[in-house]
Length: 320
Image (cartoon, rainbow, N blue to C red; front, side, top):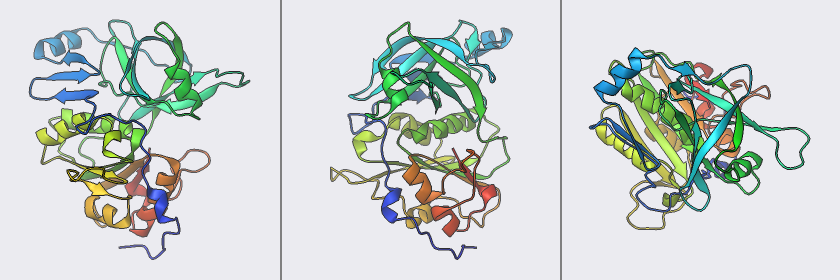
């Protein structure tokens, strides 16, 4: 049931702009999940989730750090550079405290930048496990014109960042969907990773997922080792496809170019299927080309771009 309305957005706007180079063809390994051992490596740190650990945690309910109505101060514990413009920032929580994010949700950060009269506010999605205690991690690329990313990159251990949340995104219920298609560009991978981790960690959730992750180059693919490990461990439940603007090596086996109509048709669940969802997160030009942008009030707005052309309805599309 394809829509008859043609997509009027220039095709080149679906180009994916990466937000976190990795500096190596195999990915930077910033967050590698070993599902076989139950250990998670985040920025060089191992976190085990053995049966003993889980039993101890369940016996002592964690408190939640976030407040949805007020900004709370969180102290930066350490900043670990990943490459020339991307770092992992670890913020401290109390030992028996977890952040308190639902699936799927994000939070907003606030900071007074430079001589600005008003504070800058931006949304972020952490990459640490949902129920991690004592800490949470952000992976952030520094943009030359990005006020908040530059501010966070200038922070030193002990500095404070104000955060409010959670901010609900996609209400997710186990078993409600048969298939989820995801298209991410650059740091738009973080909410997709949040959902992927949640689905794969639930043995009762058999939802099939397909991710298309677009970046400028192979070296720009953030969290690649994590995604590859998840896909390897769950081949019947998760498929991951990488798209780069231009291959620099003959060894590249992924797609090359932009996120096009043909690419969406090739990898995303079709609009005429039951119980499906297609989601997108990335730079504004990419969102405009693929799904249409959100409404001025930040609600979902109308479906546009390639998704509209291919007949997806507002109930089948979610814009992170």
